[in-house]
Length: 84
Image 1 (cartoon, one colour):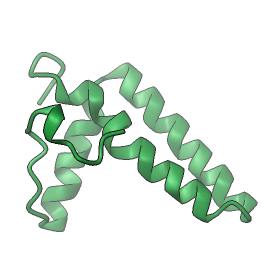
Image 2 (tube, rainbow, N blue to C red; image 1 turned 90 degrees about the vertical axis):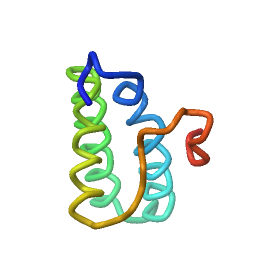
Image 3 (cartoon, rainbow, N blue to C red; image 1 turned 90 degrees about the horizontal axis):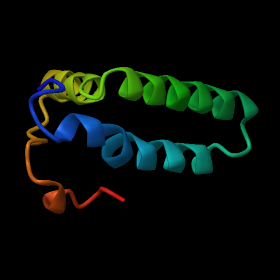
């Protein structure tokens, strides 16, 4: 899916990655190196999301395909139970 292909790309960071990174940050709050790494990852993901709204969606599709998880990201946002 690309920028012209639909609504999912622009919502990928907020729905898929933001909550995960928040949980990681909470679980590693006593590890300064981990917090710095999480901050750098969050910044890089936000920058890539701004530069190309579909990048994280496409990246996520590749990761899911390689992991052989049977998850369909192409559902309506109302079906995303994990989206804050």
